[in-house]
Length: 231
Image 1 (cartoon, rainbow, N blue to C red):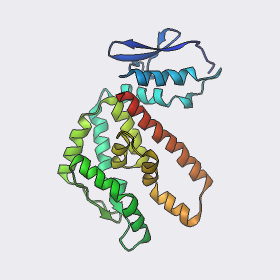
Image 2 (spheres, rainbow, N blue to C red):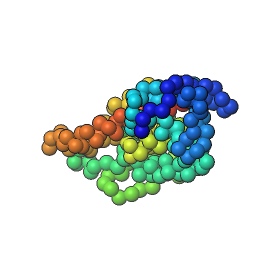
Image 3 (cartoon, rainbow, N blue to C red):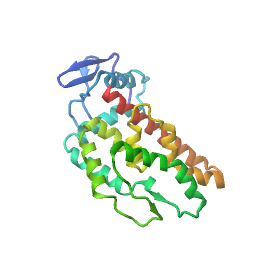
Image 4 (tube, rainbow, N blue to C red):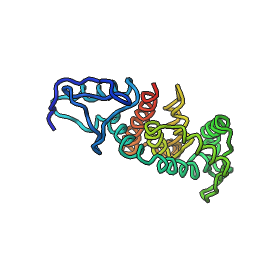
C-alpha cells in the first residue's frame, strides 16, 4: 500500500489520546475509535506511522496492532483473557522440570528457580514444581490470588501480558516482564532454556535462531507497550 498521508500527530481526546493522519483520527481494525490511555503510547504509535516510507510496511505496526487487540478483542470481554492467562499458570513452563538425576535439572534449578521464588514472594503464593510432564494442578489459593491480581489490569496491560505470556509459555515470566526495569533478555532466555540447552549440546540451527530472534523482538516490544500504556 502506498503512503496516503503527509502529517502524523497525536492529540488528546475524550478518554485518552489518538493518532491523527493529516488531521483525521485512526480507527482500529475492528472499526472502533483508537483511543489509548497515555500520551507516551500515542507518541510511540505516531512514530510508527511517521517512520513509514513511500510504501507502508504493515509488519512495522507492532504497537498499533497491540492497541487494536486491546480495544477490539480484550476490552469487550476482559474476563476471557484473564481466564486464558490463568490457564498458563496451571501449566507454567517454569514449574515442569526434568527428573532430579538429569543434567538439565541442575540448569533449570539455576535459571528457573529464582524466578519462581521471586513470583512467590511478590504475590504471596506457592507454585507446585513437577518432575516430568504429568500435570498437577496449582493450589486454588494461588490461582485465586493471581486472578485478583489480573483483575487490576486494564485491557492494554492485559494485551501486553497475553503476548508476553504466550511467547514465553509462562505466566510467571509474563508477569515478571511487566515489572519496572525487568531483565527482559534474561527472562527471554529462561523461557527458551531447553532450546538453548539443546543448541549448546548439538549446535545451533540457523532457522530456529532466526525465529527466536524475531519472537524476542516481539517480547521486548510487548513489554515496551505495557510501560508506555502506564506512563
